[in-house]
Image (cartoon, rainbow, N blue to C red):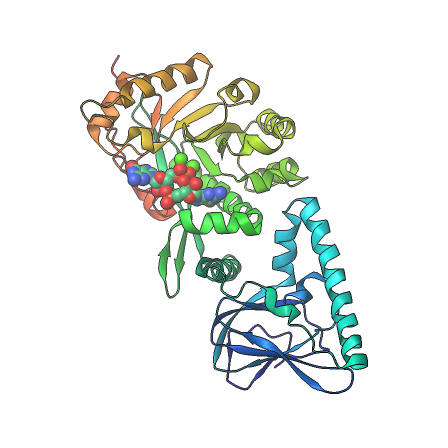
Length: 408
Ligand code: C2E
Ligand code: CA
Ligand code: CA
């Protein structure tokens, strides 16, 4: 089987990986079983063990470029998920430097041990210990699923199968659309719609989010330019960012370049971040956010109220907009609940600090009226519109009628 070929099936009896070959990838066995064997320096064949669904084979090649130490043969028909060295390196590069170092040390020791054990076997006829079999035999099914999804997501990005939908944000004082939030959509060829709540965390864990969100920013800015040109109105496009992007050294300059390239002004772009971003490296993040703000972009805190960080960050970081998480809006009007007081507090807190407050997940007219009464500035939610493709968004904009206006 050619080593450079991406494959997902192997027939019973087929050689999947060959001892001595080089190859920059491993496989996760999704279904079927394989035999691992090697040829000793004496020429004697040696059976190492068998592996089934959930096991990884050929993993050492992900870490170093040495020849494969064993041959893997399909015992039954197998479905295999490819993990390339690029995938692995990206994940490793996102991990703690200590983890990276330990991986290198373990790999070197392992290779060395295999070498010495083979030598012993030659000299004393000792049985080769099943060193490869100590790995976990059946890691959780979720791991297989998420690696598979990650590969498919990469293909989707490459094949332009990812799309953006736009959900309007309404200014309560005019009832008009003040901007949009760009939300990613992925319709899988076989599995249909996959929620971003599922694929975004996978993209974040693998580091793929950097490329995906870069595409999303480009696309959202281009769509903004088209919507403003078509309607003659100004809007603000809100784009979701992940902490992985802030970890890039050229984050701010790349952001500016992308916005300018699309022909829009930074003041029409809003960066949505969550409180999670503040945990890792607050000084650096503050610097980056200040640079974004200096450029003209707006900074919004998403899902406000769901994080664990202290409120003191509201002073420390430059924040223009506070988006109240939809969990606080749900059942807002149910008798006896204390959400009203909580939301009032949040709105007052944000406003006293000069921020704009947006309520997310507004689904009913009563909720909208209650929120305007509390002094909330903007709303977003199904009561106004669901996230829609660009063409439908433009159509709706042309027919937009204000629904609930702020009471004086
Ligand atoms: P989010 O940033 O909090 O986005 C708001 C979510 O609430 C969206 O879910 C939106 O469709 C949904 N929503 C809006 N109004 C209502 C409403 O009235 N009722 C209810 N029940 N839901 C409403 P969606 O599109 O499924 O996105 C889920 C999450 O995935 C987003 O939460 C965001 O964290 C992430 N996400 C989506 N697109 C992107 C992206 O381009 N980049 C990144 N990094 N994350 C994204
Ligand atoms: Ca958001
Ligand atoms: Ca949100």
